[in-house]
Each structure stands twice: as C-alpha cells, then as structure tokens.
Image 1 (cartoon, rainbow, N blue to C red):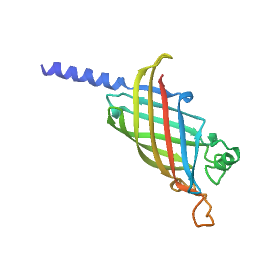
Image 2 (image 1 turned 30 degrees about the vertical axis):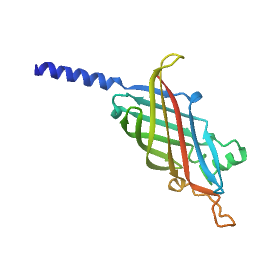
Image 3 (image 1 turned 180 degrees about the horizontal axis):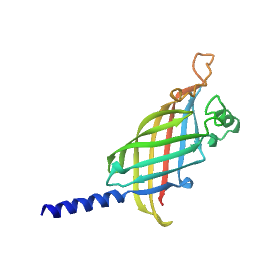
Length: 192
C-alpha cells in the first residue's frame, strides 16, 4: 500500500511539474501604459509600443509561475512627438544609454485569479523589487485557436528611485511632475 501511495504521489508531482504552460504576450491585444501628474492639476498618460515577453502559468500551482518582459524604452508614446522625444532624452529614460526596461518575476502568491506578483523591475539602469496585485484570467480556448490567458494589474513606482530625476519648480512652489508614476499592465498571452 505504501508503495502504491508513493507511486501515486510521484505521478501527481510529475503531472504538476509539466502542467505549467508557456504563453507569449500578444501585443495586438495587450498594453503596458503609465500615467503621471502634470503641474499637479492634470494627468498625462502614455504607453510603450514595443515589448515582448513570456508567462509560465499553471492555475493549480502558483509556485511554478514565471514572467519575463522586455520593453524598448524608445517606444514610449504619449501622443505628442515633442514630449516623447524629451522623454527619450537623458532628462528621462535616456533611451540611447538604457534601451530596455525589463521585468523578471520572482514569486507569485494567491489563488482563484487574485494574486500578488513580486519581481525585479529594471529601468534607467536601476533594479528594484516591486510587488503588485494582479488578476490572471484563464486559461481559455481562444476562438483564434490555441489557449490564452490574461494578466492585468497596476503598481505605483517612484521615478526618483530609478534615477529619473528631471523636474521643474513652478512659480507657486509646486513641481511640474509628480515623482509617483502609475504603471498599468493589461496583457493577453497565447500558449506557445
């Protein structure tokens, strides 16, 4: 009986090890965006247009989760070319010297679609650990064929922590830009 239980446990563990699937981000149905306060009275929004990544996910085993993404910093888009050029300059992202922003997960905890995702965010040559709530939907069978999942969440980072320090003091004593930047992630990914 002990031998039978041991074999059953080995089979279950083997199935669970191989149950995690690898998904590739579908850029046509995803967005990595951000928003920041401007003049402390309005919010400027933008997104990155060029990124790639994979997600390894098993809804029954959060410990097997892995996510990696690479964003091309020069692909920043706020629908204003003059502002976008300034954001690519050394005042902000310095896209020539720091062409990529990366995220690599280190831990996923939670269940039933509601999770806490921890990982390392590297921007402007600085790596910081971040932790943010995410929702993972699926997997589902896509009408386009194959299997798909969705991942969405948001986190706030302090741009000063990443060496993005540009700002101007206003006549009334306020600052042109807030230090806090809200990052929004809405991803659709398809099984390889």
